[in-house]
Image 1: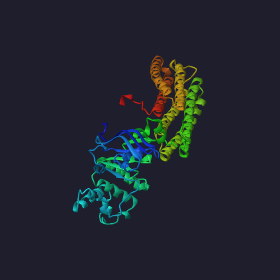
Image 2: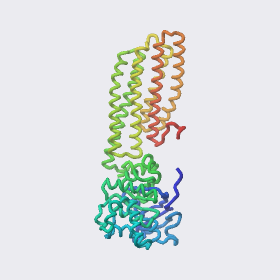
Image 3: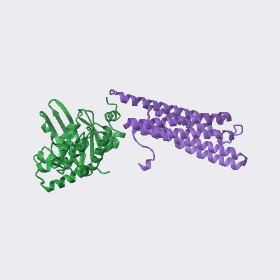
Image 4: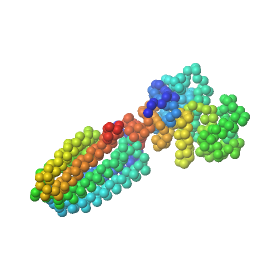
Length: 254
Length: 226
């Protein structure tokens, strides 16, 4: 199979939080329209790497970022790319479904409204498109004015994904998007993630190795801030190249 | 330095150790049955040959147990990397071991037709050929215990000479039958015997290929297709 075009890339990325060296010389390529998982024990740097791609780490005091981070070959830290533009192009979905205390409709179209990209009847059209894409439209189409916070956790996570795609991003970053969900909801969100990866580049952080194995095309394993190994998921789980990956995926890493 | 083991992985470790021990037992058993069939043939001991036919039951029981444990580990532990390769290899190896057991039975069934008093010329080469193949079985067992792909490669390399020897012996039986048609029954039995030993070497080769997969994650079967 041909190498997919690089959508996201880091070259010798180093991130420090004060004295803590969170990412160590990470050079990684995330292929366009691929679903890529990052796995590794807690504190290994996988969320830090994920957040680097839409400059979420900038918000953390004493965080120092060195090295290159690229979107479509363009540096994220250069003058050409404003953070607001970056975050429109690179959307994010969090661990806990963080619906706003607004109506379902207002939640979905929050981005387009903020970016002044649409108004009026267009907003309902956007809501229908995005809620349909996440499989929520049939359930909520008759109560778009209803409270988003009244939805079930799975519905709320679908709503957050709909909100993320409403601004038509190119990349979706997902930080443990299923960890607050039950197994059935998890399976449905995983199916949605697979569907989304056809249209978007999806990068997921997960604690669940089986989830990474089930859903992703590529998997990266991080340990103590180092990207130990990254490659096709089937290879990483059947014949990892690095002893540390072997120990982790076989459950021998204590 | 080996990392600390968690409780769950210790359980998996135990299950894999148990599985390995059962595979070794089964391999030991079929090795003994092959040796027994050859010994019965050499001595013309029909009773010993018959007891081997009954003993195959144990081999079949071992196959069922190993299969069951493999499926259980796959379902409950979701093994990955070398653990996954081990279980996958075990599932395939067990089929080859079971077939070797069946072939030992088939060899034993030919014993009544192979009179040691007046053997064919070709039949005199059988113990030597069988000893070679028994050596392959021992080596493949050692390769499995030590997860030694080099040893497994030696087993694979030993197979073509066995194939060539089998072809030569079959030709020899043919010409012996042509010279003296009264030996046709013994001739057919000898051909069966030769063919079964040759097949056992093939199964040993399959097991050796699985050991290389287990050790290196590399599939060495059918190099023309990869």
